[in-house]
Length: 79
Image 1 (tube, rainbow, N blue to C red):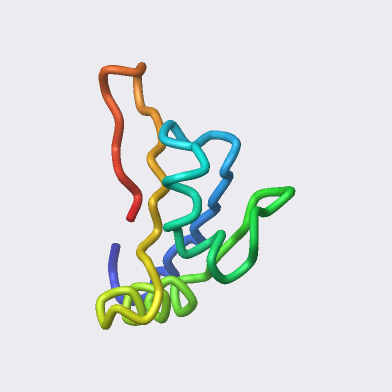
Image 2: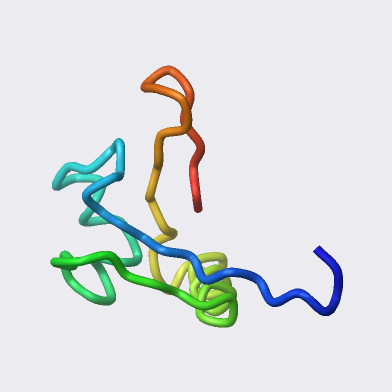
């Protein structure tokens, strides 16, 4: 990406999270700030940077979203 490109917004769809359960969701920034969302949540790059800064300072938990790539044995953590 060059300096002229705008980063794409990050879409958090809790229904697609591979680790979705009460214990993990309760310690996820999305649930802490918004409650369990009914639909996907979108964060623009500035919002994501702000959430990352708050999480790094310990003020909110980090994003716990884990989405699948090719199958259950291959996944990537988004946060």
